[in-house]
Image (tube, rainbow, N blue to C red):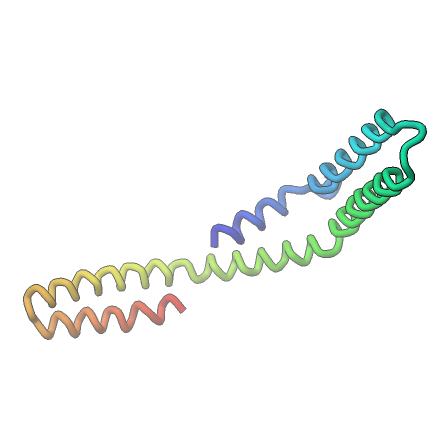
Length: 137
């Protein structure tokens, strides 16, 4: 429940006019690489080095473009999915709490039944466990 709550709230925090942080980071990597290449590229660099640098620049440009497109498409679908999971888990939360309490009481009562060798207490703990386990589902 906590993960879907966190994912949902993180995605909601991005307003429509804001830039996706991944796109901003990708843009800064791309800009830094262009600057480094412009500063350090010798005039007579081997063609293999130039080709590799151009491929890297193209990869960063594609990544930045993909992040820009993803903001509208996949992001909203993932956000809706996380919200549904969060809402479902919020609805199930009281049942989880009840099941947890019933199982803890069943464990304690089973311990008491073993120490006192009492069958009615054992069957009481088994009944609590039988009610508690389906509550988790």
